[in-house]
Image (cartoon, rainbow, N blue to C red; front, side):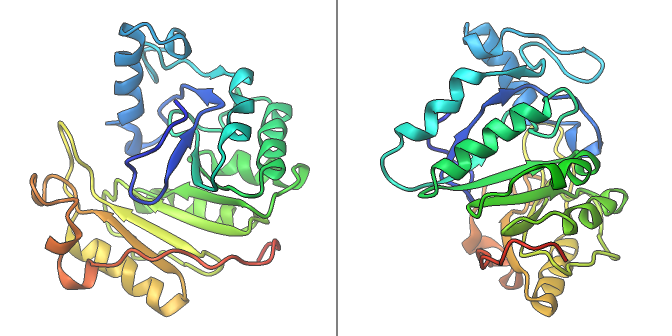
Amino acid sequence: MSDRSSIEWTEATWNPTTGCDRVSTGCDHCYALTLAKRLKAMGSAKYQNDGDPRTSGPGFGLTLHPEALSVPYGWRSPRTVFVNSMSDLFHARVPLDYVRRVFDVIADTPQHTYQVLTKRARRLWLVASRLEWPANLWMGVSVETARELPRVDALRRVPAAVRFLSCEPLLGPLTDLDLTGIDWAIVGGESGPGARPMRAEWAADIVERCRRSGTAPFVKQLGSCWDKTHHKDITQFPTALRVREYPKIRDITPV
């Protein structure tokens, strides 16, 4: 899939790899896993490799797609691109040389802005010094509960032009969250079948921490447990949560 996106904080998606494996509670209701199963049934060539049923599923086995590396060269107008909406670029089975090839494409198309998000923060940190970091690459980690806060420390050590957090689905308060060196924080509740609730005060606390640290806050949605009809309608959010800001670009240096 490499098309325009309905995700509120990006414009397009690009998947040079597909498939993944669950690593934390935020993966329990993974939209990509569900979508991969549907795409496999539809005969989509990119989603025919099945993953381990204990951690993955039909059509969601980790798969490299070298043919997709040429896709960004065909985009005429500049766009913001979420890399691997259907995978994790820092999955253990993605070879480092392949990550470098993805980074090379990013560097070679500076008219676009690329957003990479991972739950594999330890691997990200371990290989960061072995990669050339393009100025148009934003690097983020997912933080769903306090248990994942060590991912933020790993991200701080990565020399990306923008470092960001995806606190989605936010499944608990992040009372010890330190936003030092973090440029952007996306907050969102869970939606869809079996959605788990996000309390508005958890999101409000992150927004307040952003204000104190100079981090740009972006409240994506409040989750269907809050309101099935209006959970994505920012005009219906509590006033303090009606914020969708974007980060400033920093020099590429670690904290």
